[in-house]
Length: 498
View 1 (cartoon, rainbow, N blue to C red):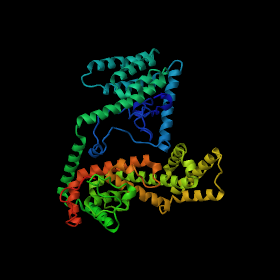
View 2: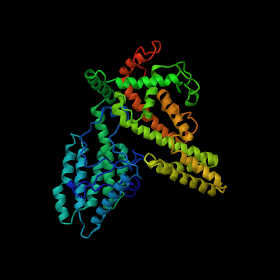
View 3: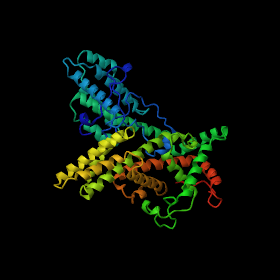
View 4: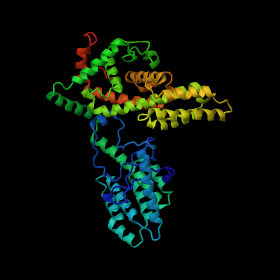
């Protein structure tokens, strides 16, 4: 946290009931969510509610309490940023006035006191009494009325308390606050780091209250589903159709990745090799195909599998992430075909092009044609400028027109480039279910190497979701598959975990 004023996400003036000086923290942006530059959770929340849907805890091995992720360039993100900056500017003006206006500062100090108290363990009675006395609202109000409230001194006291209460991972962030001498900037930094400390405490509380969260969530979900199934015998009808459709899909085309690693110790084929080595139909492959089909689900199809209803929103998010990755890879593939290794051999150029393209693709889902028109213009400009900077000949007018035309075609689902990339990403995801994400990343199909980071994130989320779902509902899938596959291929016991 080198510069709190420049990097700390601003705070919202808050709700009317608590007054105009009550800051409210936005959700994190899509940058590094573990960084000290991140905004804290909503600070006016006391943090007593540490419950979380059991399947969320089970799927996320590194579960921590977080906030809604807002793209920094989204309309909502920009609106919040404007409000937050306005709040902190207003606080600075109040403290700089003659005489100073301490109304907002008092609200902030009151909330900071509540947060510090919420971080204490039950046995820390001495610290609790000390904080209550040092930040007593009545006393601070009297000091403010006399014009004698020393905000900077109180802030330094607060940072000393934070040093005692923070986890080791936050030591550096707290120490960096000591170098700030401006009261408004220091309060802003304090709020930021306190939010991270609150998040640490919530994570610890969840883990301590539930020593085996994954096992607990699996048993809890299965028991609840069995209770419903006992009352509704037809509760698995849509699930049966979903698995039947996957088995039919595999019967008409060879699977793209084998069931599991070779038990003899020979490495399992990579995504590139797997397509040429089809395996016999098996329960594990049927289930893999079924999960992949969820990423292509027709929104008009109301027969969504009952065992995945709780995960439907997550699957829709994965589908959107898959679509964005497909379009991004398609853009990079087309661009590289026109500029070759001269530009795409430069990691700096590729990184810049990726960042700018991803920003322009935020509106792709709602306005694909307009988004791709803007992308085509930007990519063409980037290539021309980079070639010029390197002293190389610019693209001809015909090449430029062809480049922009192919990029704009990506807006269409029927685009040849987009279709090929989409098939390759699905192949990658299929192999993630069988080989694991890291092994699948070792030999990516052509055209995907430039989005390796995006694929790693997508693949891990997909694997986590499907693995947890199978752990919960595996016994039901096993019984259904016994009725769908020939006796020689039907699972004698529960389907092997993907």
